[in-house]
Image (cartoon, rainbow, N blue to C red; front, side):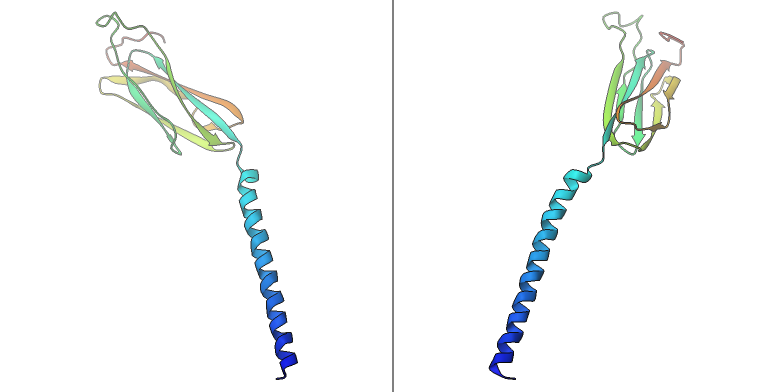
Length: 141
């Protein structure tokens, strides 16, 4: 091979190397930009555990919701006010979230979770659960 053909081959390799580097740099720049643009729209799911005086836990699949309400007897603890509580989590729009309500010992599920499952929409989504003590002390229903 002549010196001329060697430098020509070296120049072609150099151009190919430069082109490959440019392609890799462009691909890296695009991949860094895509996740920000391709982020899934989120919806917020609120689970209300209403004060039926019973206790229990609500969890979700996929994970994100994990709320617990403590049971109480309004005739024994008069310092406490009736209350409702909520927990929430964000999920991608379109996700189907299945809720599981498990009463504490001495309590039962009076109502809910309703609705269940929940297909997440943009913005606000909710479900409702009421736990009551087994003795029948329930604030409603």
